[in-house]
Length: 248
Figure (cartoon, rainbow, N blue to C red):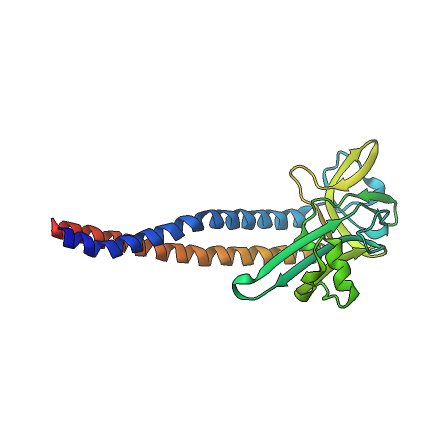
């Protein structure tokens, strides 16, 4: 009997290892699934949000779409003089020491659509829909971009990509009309998104669709891996049971 149990130990170890990785994968899969659902809902929302002009805005309108120019940035992202929104993506290192970071800095700006002006509070905006391919800064611009998001100059050796929305640039804003201290502004609502993008609605919907598909593909691949692990677990446990019953 002890010999039979000894032969079952490797199978038990295999089953335990598979179970460990399967359990560890569950929170990651749940997080990805939630992310995919949110991107899907955002895509549907962007396709349906009504377009408004600043002149017709009221605090009770809820989610609206505006297209206009960033006319003022009173407190720009430092050390720049005209940037309202800056997103930095950084990849540094190789192999196991590889690091990836995504940082965003945003400041309130005044949007002018030709019919009037309204303040936009970009806090909490969707960083993945700013639009464009981003630029790879060089020289001092790399150091300035790192400083803007609070990263040290030593990270300038990594691959850096930057998206920036500046004064004078035309943007699309999808947000909720609100009022604060008697002043109307557009920002992120408790249950509604905020998107500030250089692209129009078709570009934003298409981009959100691509992001949704990417998430679902990853979920599908991990799901197949999980099923394979479950199969291995069942087979291993079956073999263990078979060995123990034979020994009995």
